Length: 178
Length: 179
Ligand SMILES: [Zn+2]
Image (cartoon, rainbow over all chains, first blue to last red; front, side, top):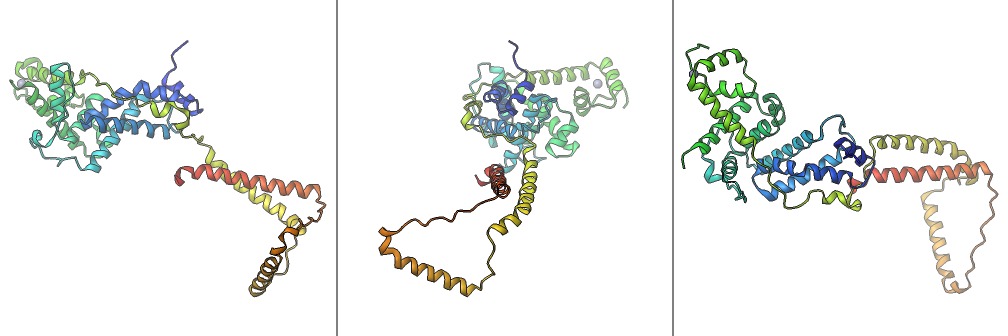
């Protein structure tokens, strides 16, 4: 028996076959949660928003174009929810403020078995939220500058400056001698 | 860009993001300049470190709300809202067709004045109150036997069925808003 594709599962879910959408969620939940986690750096919030992303997607399952890939779409839905969440919380810091994020951010201590991965997560968590967003969209969702500008509704020049500054901060934190 | 100038951070970033307009010139400089190619290697290393960050595990399954059929909201197909207009049109047509029959069966009395209606109601109410002690002797009134024509009966039933469909359809559509 062949494993059903995402497309099969979406079509089944549309026909009301119980369990089909659940299987789709099971397939993509870790990836979607990690999108939220990389942006929010708070586990509880990230799980809640990942859940919300799947609920939103389910509500739109009848209008989703099945010829598109489900994974990039659901990850964009999740990133967008995180953006709205940050905006509603006014966590987003001043756009040009390259403040020392260490004091303002409270990176959650995650059980990270690999020390280097822990350092990378810590460095990501120390970034201002809007920098984390562009890092997520460029490096993990492989969006172009233009696509990021549209998604975040910011000028192209801001996309570049946020991205380049974020990388500079990350490089400084990760390559600094201990 | 002069070949002897070092590449800027912006150029290196855009080059790796495949968004640099002067790719050939940047590549020409990178071949001849060890310093800039070392900076590029560092930036590349950062990219791959970021992108190879492993996924964290979830503490709960997000599929839970979608696995029990009872918790799943019923999904209405996209064409469903369109049927509401159709239902409304059919109901209206049925009403128009059935109206003459209904009027014939239940002829409307000449519109009484509001005062007379009140007086009638009051009279009926007091008459009913008077009869109340004799409730034990109350007999079910015998309904007059109406000899419906089949066509009228059919049209009346159709009107009722269509109205019910309309109500149910609207109820389904408004379900989420009511909640
Ligand atoms: Zn150089």
